[in-house]
Image (cartoon, rainbow, N blue to C red; front, side, top):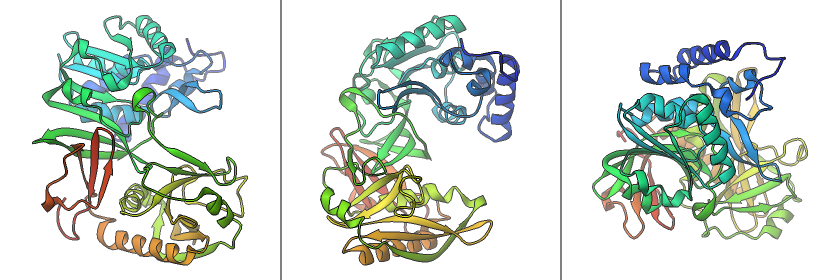
Length: 413
């Protein structure tokens, strides 16, 4: 059980404070979801060394790490859990599969679907499911199933499901998930699209799935047969790492490392952003990733790479590529409230790549910044969107192809 003598508030008061905050910020909008958050003791699902205060902040709680320090299991941030519960449109008596266990979110689901509902939570790691089982029992949810299984197989034993809620990052949609979903069911899945993870609310439409909502998010990656097939290229040790999601992007790691030793080219666009307009990042990042050209993301240790690489986002920075050059999204402060978008380039193609980046930023600002965002659909591998849809980007995976279509200026999505 989490908690220690230094906790500022008892668990009940801390939980009340968190729920009040989630309501005030607009993350909780229904009585059923609010009641679930008020009833489920989040601290019982956190590791023993996590304080009550930390357990009831609107943030992620890491529950397990690999030897290298990377998280393999966590309790998601409450704002995101509330958003996914609302998106699932759960009704009393619903049957729900959660993929990626920890126990807390399964308990929230159980509260929403009520005593006549069915909740099954699966995880590939037996340590995680064992912890979830113990915490669920302690918290008063012995009827929630916690099962050790590979995510790609789902859990046919309790199917069909009215909703499948995936709480690990996926790059593909295994056929088992759709086979186990009712015809009118909803699939909530954090899907990785060229380094950009979006939590998609997916519903069936004819022979494919349509995303009715997409929200920027972060989750630990799926393990097992459905793990995300990323390539991590260390360009300067762990200080500068290029992450590639698709096998079609051809780069020469040694040439890119050499490029970092060339003078950096800094260019700036007329496009700016203020502190009040931070949501624009989500749209701009996905717009840059949607371009049918070589693309990756940079993860940078800003302290150790200071003076060399200064990306807009140190974890997932959009980056345009050639085999021996790169240009990433950059930003500089103009005054106390305003920043300017630009690009930093390295290598023999730096001038071309930074010019391209600025043009893309300008088009996004003019045509898509204040628009409805892209139309995202997911199609079984071997099928493609209708020709009239003209997707800008197709990301082919083993089981599914993700199509991202940006609407023409002035037209609805």
